[in-house]
Image (cartoon, rainbow over all chains, first blue to last red; front, side, top):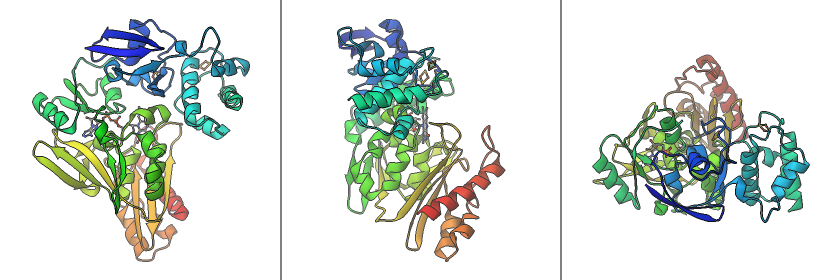
Length: 152
Length: 272
Ligand SMILES: Cc1cc2nc3c(=O)[nH]c(=O)nc-3n(C[C@H](O)[C@H](O)[C@H](O)COP(=O)(O)OP(=O)(O)OC[C@H]3O[C@@H](n4cnc5c(N)ncnc54)[C@H](O)[C@@H]3O)c2cc1C
Ligand code: FES
Ligand code: FES
């Protein structure tokens, strides 16, 4: 089936099988491998990207469901070589170790701040409920999101 | 994991969805948010041959004040319920329960209609709407009918909906200032409840829905009856599992679920 999507500002017309998951489309058809697959069972959030401005788990969305949509992946966050404030906040607050969960965390965190620009620590923790990190113990991730919100 | 191959068609209206599901036979399924169906398809626990995507029927996404009740379109997403000012005013228990579903990413996709049609006893919104005395509206090839929540859930993942019927609207009576509380006991963030309780109370009336206490969502009528006859909360809560038949699983034995139900119903009623 033909789909028409805008990914990180670039328009793509692609032919996909109906069963193609959005994460596979983004990674394999478009070569945007920043979006990771962690659990593949809708739990870990590593595959989070923005679909029409909201974080979703792209391992649980069909590419055909995204037909016509505006998609933002981690690769589209920086502007003119300048990191997004959330990326900077993760770096400055040591919000990552191995980095596997990071693209999903950053996409979930930017979606969270759109909906709630000044969250409390508890709201950050609840807002990132759908993202698992095996390394950091979450503390510095939460600090990074709070720092980014404070800088907004 | 990739689902088995299927054909995909998209419906632009409720009528078109019903026609398409009728044309494609028993093996076809509606696709709403996909957050129950796609995980099952990826595990190949479901292998529909055709998906009829109803996710773009924007006419079925609304929350409206309809006088004595609030009318909610079946395609309304959990996130829209959670943030609705109409629900916050008139059915705060449902707005709160929707905010407890999974995580924000799940709530950006999953719909109330999908949750109720899927009728997982571990899901939050079937038990919550049951406790609230909701009515569901189903549309089929020969017209529309109303089904009381109490008649809708018939067995594990089985409902009163025919294969070619689309759930279009959920009608929830206004709570009229009733006290309410929602208890969700789980061990991990984002998870389904091991046991959950949705409760409201006003004067002598109450409604108590139990999550994950049997093969369907359960209405704890024994507790409500005891309360209306003047029993204390502590005594009434002892009857929490009278109407339930909990199963054992990795998380909890049936006995532990009975214990949890009594404790959580007591806590919920104390907070109502
Ligand atoms: C990681 C994760 C965590 C979750 N945690 C929770 C939780 O804590 N609590 C909870 O309650 N739920 C939870 N869910 C489930 C979530 O709420 C689903 O969104 C919901 O159960 C199904 O809604 P959907 O729109 O995604 O339906 P779909 O998956 O699209 O459809 C589900 C079923 O209903 C049918 N259907 C859908 N819409 C209609 C309709 N209008 N008429 C007739 N049939 C229809 C479909 O054919 C399918 O059989 C979780 C899901 C995930 C992935
Ligand atoms: S890979 Fe999608 S949630 Fe884990
Ligand atoms: S930094 Fe390693 S999984 Fe989060």
